Length: 360
Ligand SMILES: Cc1cc2nc3c(=O)[nH]c(=O)nc-3n(C[C@H](O)[C@H](O)[C@H](O)COP(=O)(O)OP(=O)(O)OC[C@H]3O[C@@H](n4cnc5c(N)ncnc54)[C@H](O)[C@@H]3O)c2cc1C
Image (cartoon, rainbow, N blue to C red; front, side):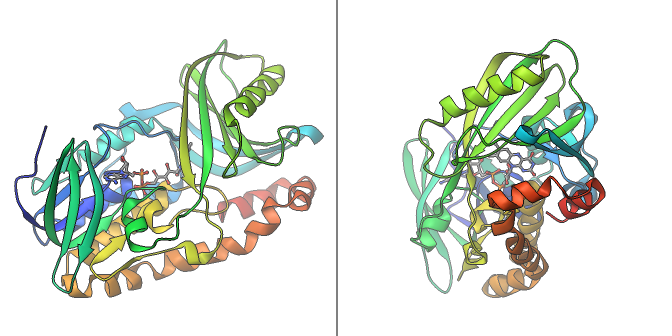
């Protein structure tokens, strides 16, 4: 069991995903930083591992994404399918195809020496006043109170930091991912598939080649009953049309943020900032979240590097463009999720789908 070295830190960061790492890296310019993560590290987060160009641009100042974490094919273009109508639209939206576990481990390696990382340490709550935040943290069964000038919650879709600040619980999509063997290479696309037969609780499925396996994921709306049975049905339907898809080698499930309105964004309160999914920062229309986690994590860290009393105001200023971008995406959401929207998408020419998806 590891306990932190100090009782007081300049900043405590909760969560060591992409938001947490960049928040800690910049916050460390002002002083000592403690990152606590409830998982064992390096972690293995359920994810498609697709890096959007905004993720790559945000990462550039910190170093090149290492070749060793890139999966084959290196890049995949987004392709939209309306399965029942046999409609397929290839877009120019391209993603770098990486191992998410490798990516998270590489990011942890970017942290400077004055950032202390403690795994299997869960934040259970906190109180704050005008001077400091006192965090209650369970260090692998040993509860302790640690203080800091600031606390940054980067603890993902089911954020405890957010729930402590705002008692309204946010809803989550249920996601399932199966890794299956392939008898020969499948086409080099990030296929996003809409099918009517799975039921109204089904959002969409996706297929991505990942080296010598393929990833088949499905997104289900909150409170879906028996999602694993629906995922079995998705996989068997896909196998009928993509005969290379073989046996399941691994299945995982996760929660992903279900954003309903711009009010679901919560940048923080007092001396507590929220970044990444914890703050409601991800694309409500496409589910792409890494670029938002990186950018809001970086901005929270930059804000924390200055006067702690002014950190929230600075963070609001820095994240103004990102919040405006998310608000704009909400305008598309009701139409995109409606049956009519999905039907009409089949008639839109591929170059227009390409342009629209670049903005989603
Ligand atoms: C199935 C799936 C596929 C996805 N595919 C993609 C994709 O291909 N591309 C993309 O851009 N986005 C994708 N996303 C979204 C993306 O994974 C997230 O948006 C991104 O990881 C958010 O980063 P984050 O740093 O905010 O939080 P996370 O990466 O979720 O990290 C949060 C961390 O906080 C820790 N934590 C939680 N609670 C506590 C606590 N109480 N105390 C301490 N630590 C805690 C967790 O252990 C975790 O390590 C996908 C999501 C899902 C579910």
